[in-house]
Length: 175
Image (cartoon, rainbow, N blue to C red; front, side, top):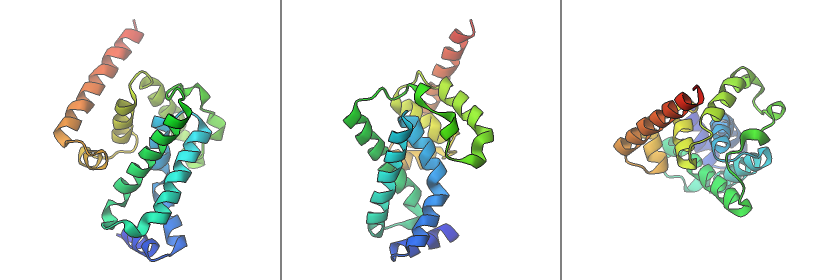
């Protein structure tokens, strides 16, 4: 409830409230950007672009409870823009520098997250986004379906298919 109040304050021009709202979602934004881009600088740029766009346009947000979905959509568009401009190889995780991991408090989870990204490396961009939002960001299928404008039952089917694809892939690697 406090976050909704902060969003309303931000809509009324309170810059500090906006900063507090962003701090609340920053880790999730990072993980989503990381699932779509490989270069640390590109990830930072995408996040910065998304945050700046959100800051400029927050007054246009009609339903404050949908802030998270709104900013994730903005971030995904920002990631897509950077990808299309640079024509980079999206999922070559070798560029990720563990020493530059932004969230010092999450260093314990870093190895698990890197293992996760290594496991999903073979998936296409949409599959990586879905599986990352579901498992790392812990969005519900309902939330993901709203954010990405996908039918929830279709999403559940895609997640099941992705899990099977990962099981098959891991089975091949272990042989």
